Image 1 (cartoon, rainbow, N blue to C red):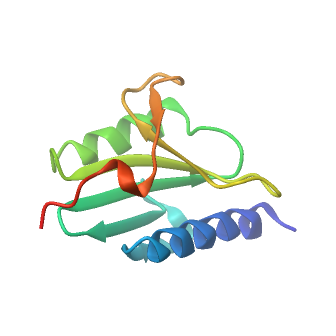
Image 2 (tube, rainbow, N blue to C red):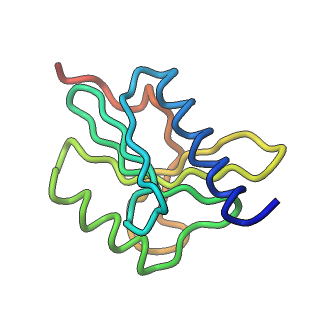
Length: 113
């Protein structure tokens, strides 16, 4: 399976998971932007960078955090990791360093409707 096909699989797994948890989702086809998936619930905008096995590099993390800062209190910068045969994992970015993240789940943010 090609790297593109594996990456697309991760994106669709993320979309399926978020839709099952009440989010409306948009996939960035060809993923040339900073977020592969944007997911929306009342009061929440998730910007999700999807990866198979490793965290994005510093430039990608900086861009994701910069755009998320445009919607303070609403936007959540996330990385979704999903190696083949392992569970989907979400990490909320808290800074630009490689270990600057916390685990994230849909229930971590209260709706503000």
